[in-house]
Length: 338
Ligand code: UT7
Image (cartoon, rainbow, N blue to C red; front, side, top):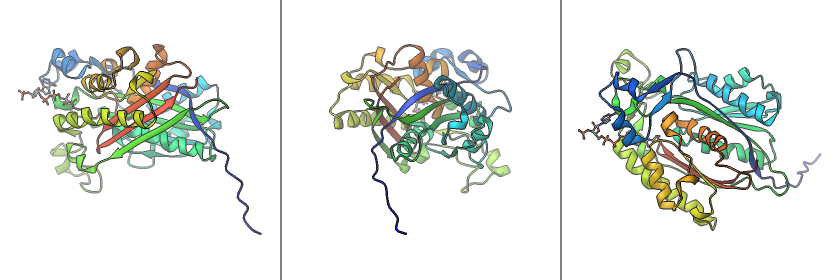
């Protein structure tokens, strides 16, 4: 017998549903004033954050991812049994292994799905979105769920004022499906990684380099360490650079965008990118004031905010952009199709 390959039919991928979830418990700037030497004015002026949501003890990343996935599925009106792939972008998996995707698959009751975790910090969601889109575009799968979820409070030192004011917990999920005739869906992506940035933002211990020990715990090496200024300078430059690159190579300018959904790390980074692109603020999604930086969760949570606040309508050109630990950087251009 000889192998006969079928001709490949070009398929485009689109986002067909969105869901997000944050835990109910709020940690406000006033709460933080009682924990470290900080104040509401400094946090608001330097970051734009007023409050963030934090899990109660015992709630893990898979729990938030599960809730976001359920909402995403119910908005699309389908059952978890229809899912073929689940990809979870996270830097705070429930445990080193198994993958959080397996735990979400089990919680959802998705017996036909395979999947895996993807680690790219704040760019985790857009990176995972492209991997999921390629699985749809190849014709291999028709229903791929992409989740960005993090419980950052599990790796934050609440005595370190330079990091504890920034991060929150949360999850967002999208469903990827093949486009219908006339739809365009995901258009282009531009991704970069640069490992020379690793010392500027990391969690030093707990991996193969520095396995957990009394010494690593005593040295607080299981918490996020960030050189804020270095990351800030890189993020301001890189966010604009990748956004301009992807727009230019698609013959577009900021004026063509219906909606810009950036990673929510610092309001000043978002405003500077919007200004560089010449975007009026009514076309920029900003929810950092309510959620802080939820790492892989920010972009799908912001997509949900955009829907709830009527920022998004069918046919809009949408730009996603993120910069984060690694360094990693991602820009995604897509047309909104629902
Ligand atoms: O999503 C992952 C990627 N991460 C990012 O994109 C984060 C990028 N970085 C940032 O957003 C900012 O660098 C921070 C918000 C982390 C810090 O803001 P900054 O304006 O860069 O502050 P800084 O670190 O330069 O500190 C300025 C001053 C210092 O005091 P002195 O030395 O000038 O007296 C800090 O000690 O502010 C002080 N400071 C604070 N004061 C009150 C630092 N943190 C605090 C605080 N409350 N929480």
